Image 1: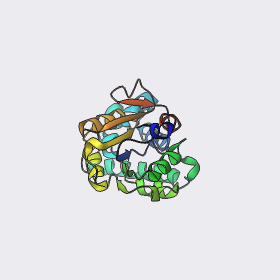
Image 2: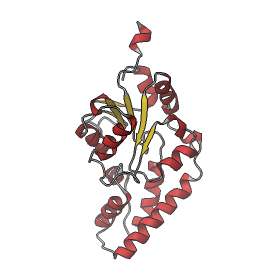
Image 3: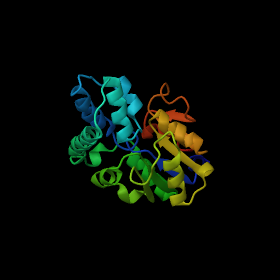
Image 4: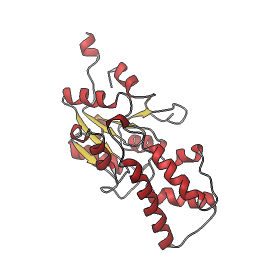
Length: 220
């Protein structure tokens, strides 16, 4: 009975990247904070919550709005490029130790049970990060910022991910750390599991602090 209880129910498992598999959110925060400081604006951790799961262009627009400044298209592109270069300098130093607790064990459990695994992330650097951390081979499909035109909370990224692994939306579960990501999963008709704070992710079907807690439950 115990063995049966720990069987995972859904067929497709879709993961966000930042804040779910790895904590690259801290790299984004530092890089965006530097950009904001050029305009006399100090990005807070509270405001940074609104940038999670949001594209680079939309994030920069928010920061410029908060700073109360407008820039030319040329300057905008230069800022976006510089932020990404700064962020990538941190990513270049990543390794397996940057994988969040329980993630690799959970991915390996999914594979052992024959489940389909996909990444659904706004990051255009997703493949690089998965390679640096040594877990890219655990994914059946990767959908990132290069594959989508609509940012979360639009469900496009998750719908494409489900199509790529050949699983119906209602048979997929999504792991997210952002409000926008949870909304996107629910709009797609998928089960949404929040990784982080229940206060922030109250729209999720269930919320866990990390994947060690997910593994302990064992019945998703």
